[in-house]
Picture 1 (cartoon, rainbow, N blue to C red):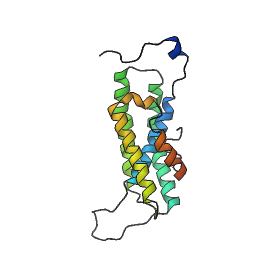
Picture 2: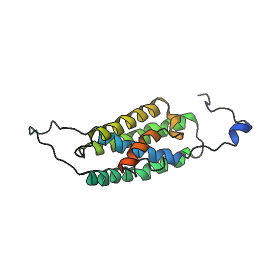
Picture 3: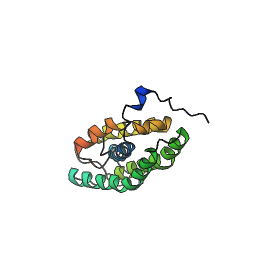
Picture 4: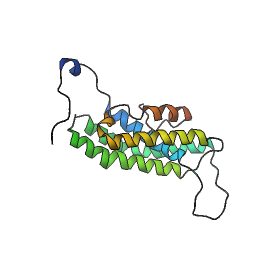
Length: 166
């Protein structure tokens, strides 16, 4: 497989590279936001009533979900710090980042949505899902601030453990 990395020139060797751990954290936040935005009714019961969650509980539980994913994502980020090949980056994204973010999204979705916050949680979900699609399509983006847009919304909402470095 050809090496897709650009040839290093004096201009590219002096510019700082984004920290891979930063993207891992961002990915975690993305997962959290995705879960929050996808919350809705469940087909498991015939009742039309939904369990409400307070914003404080939602933020605490979503941050715990993201925080639980941090060790695996940090380890994967450390692998990326050694400037691996394109194939190695793709493997780390496919085998670690994507499943972790998807699991975080599912966990956060299961929390429900705080009353009155549907628009914000939906926006977070849309952002993280779009960013997840980006890294699935182009795994090298994991070494950039691919989850930065998600992090801005999620951090303002209180999900600071999700994509904490963005």
